[in-house]
Structures are given as structure tokens and as C-alpha cells.
Amino acid sequence: MTTKQKAYFALAGTSILWGTTWVASRIAVQKAPGLQIAAIRQLIAGTLLVSFFLVRGQKIPNRKQFVWLLLMSLLMFVSSNGLATISVKYIPSGLSALIAALYPLCVVIIEMVFFKNNKITLFTILGLLLGIGGIAIVFYDNAFHAHPNGYGMGILTSVISMITWSIATVFIARKKMDMNPYNATGWEMLIGSIILISFIGISGDHIPLSKIQPEAWAAIAYLVTAGSVIAFAAFIYTMKHLPPAIAALYAYLNPIVAIIVGSIIVGEKLTVVILVGSLITLVGVYIVNQSLKKQRDYFQIDADAV
View 1: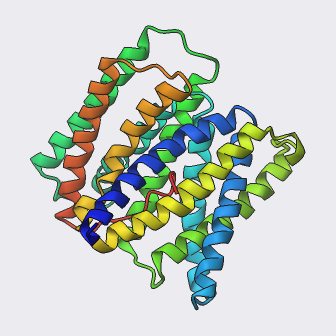
View 2 (view 1 turned 45 degrees about the vertical axis):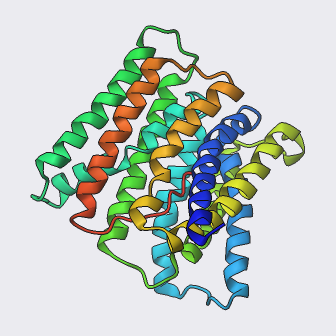
């Protein structure tokens, strides 16, 4: 197998593994509070990543870097990943993954409103309309069905999660930090876990570790090993050996994987209308993302899945 073939294999693995982590999160949060699940996952994964890079000679962040890592941790792992984990307790994992994929659309709106970006093209507007229209189709298909308690909460937390991720993306695009991005991700997860542990300790929204059922521990183990170690390594390999535009395709495949796997494993609703709406949304997101890349490099790791 050639290096290029291995890279495409790694891309497929990244897409599948990160897509299935949404379903694993949904399984875990049925057995324990969402923030507790997020804290445990981030603590283990962050410790593994930080340890890996320290062994390889990376230095401990200085004061300036730590302040930046703290801000990114609050936005991406405490708020975005934490709320996304909560959301899948109340809404299908595929729907939560699809809402998360809308972040490039939110980035465009933030740029327009707060930074007066006048470089928005008709191509960008077309993508926005398709993205919003696709989501509308998905919601319409669910509009006339009874929903479990907390459905609105799931939608709200998922949307806020997407917005905070978008804000972090804008910050990163406008101010680069002189630090290995993968090492930074490990520190952000570790810092985020400490903040989440402190929060759930104060709020009391947690259960004893001994009370967490084996099914939840198995899901957490999968989130850490498959989502934060194996898929992470595969993603790095993909970025090294494939063009960024191709390597970034995982972001459009994740929701589809989550929708299909969610319907098979946990019985989430799947119809032709939902699939069509999801595809329209992802086409819109792709168009918007392409228009953004013409203005600046918006590359960022998908940490709701790491």
C-alpha cells in the first residue's frame, strides 16, 4: 500500500471514528451526567496527549500561552464540547453533529456583524441559504412528531455549543499562537477537564464513579481511544500526506456517519427527508467553507469529536 493510499485509509478512519463518537457520547450520557462524562473524557485524553508531547521534548506553556490556552479551553472544551455532550442526552446524535457542522456559517455571520467583513460573496450567501434550508428540512421532518422531555434543551445546548466553537475559530484565525496546535489541544482538554470537575463538584451534578455503569465506561473508553488517540493520529497522518482541502472532508462525513450509525445502534429516527436535508446542509457548509478559505486559512481541528 502506497503512502497516499494509507492517507486515504486514514481519512476514512478519521471520518468514521469521529462520526461514531457522537453516538458513543449519547450512550454514555444516558448513564451519567453529560458534564461528568465530558470531564472524564477530557481528563484522560488531555493527560495522554500532554504526556506524549512532554516526552517528545515539548516545553510547558509559558504564562502568555497559558492565558490563551485557558480562553480556548473555556470556549472549545468547557462550553462547546461540554454542551455538545449534554445535548445528545436529549436529541439524536446525528442532529447534534449536523448542528455542530454549521459553525462555518456562524463564522461568516460573526465576521459580518462584529468585524464588518465586506468580502462576503454571492457564493457565500448561496452556501448560507443552503445550510439554513437543509436544517429547516431536517427540523420540518421532526416538527409533527412527539419529542421527549428536554428536546428544546438539547437543541439550545447544541446551538450554543456551535456558537462558542465559532467564536473560538474566529479568535484563532485572527491571532495565531506560537505553539504546536496538537500539543495545545492536549493542554486545552486537560485545563477544560479541571474546570469541569470543579464546576460539577460545586454544582453537585455528578454521581460517584463507582455508580457509573459498565456501558458508560465502555463508551468513555471508546471516546478516548478511538476518538482522541487513534482518530487523532490518523488525522495527523492525513494532514501530512493529503492536501488540506481533501483532509478536511472528514468534517462533512462526520454528521452522515453519526446519523446512520445512530439509527442502527441506538434506534434514532432516519428518513429519506432527514438524509436529503442533511446533505443539503453539508453542501451549504462546504460552499461557505470554500469561500472562507479564499479569504484566510480557517483550518482547525474538530475538538467536539477529539
